[in-house]
Amino acid sequence: MKVKVLILPKEGLLDPEGRAVKEVLEDNGYKVKDVRVGKMIELDVEDPSQVKEIVEKFLYNPLIEEYVIE
Amino acid sequence: MKVKVLILPKEGLLDPEGRAVKEVLEDNGYKVKDVRVGKMIELDVEDPSQVKEIVEKFLYNPLIEEYVIE
Image (cartoon, rainbow over all chains, first blue to last red):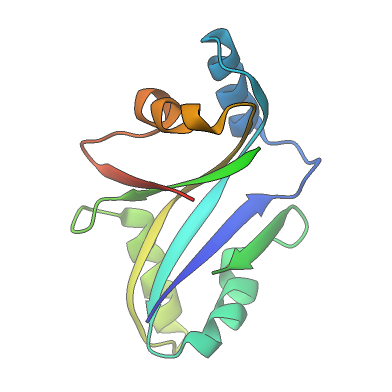
């Protein structure tokens, strides 16, 4: 079964890639309030109930990131 | 308005980060059929109808990636 995990830098934390994207878009005339760049990991696992454990053990850093399982 | 954009390596294409994650998870006893690692970009824009254009012009590489706007 396929499960999507979204991992983003915590709101308010430095996100250099997001800032760079925001600047480029503004330079090109788009009105952008905020950009955050994170990771999206698609896991195709036998037992989807293990995904939370997998994410917390291996895939995200609780100090600087937050995650959502979809 | 906040819009999420998911950008993934095309299915079947080399995804070294995904392969590395799959190996680590298998070494730790999880049954994993596939892992794909991509980007998730959250755009907070004034005009959400511009997001498709932004993604196609600036954020993804059509040769090796596919995207979904959520």
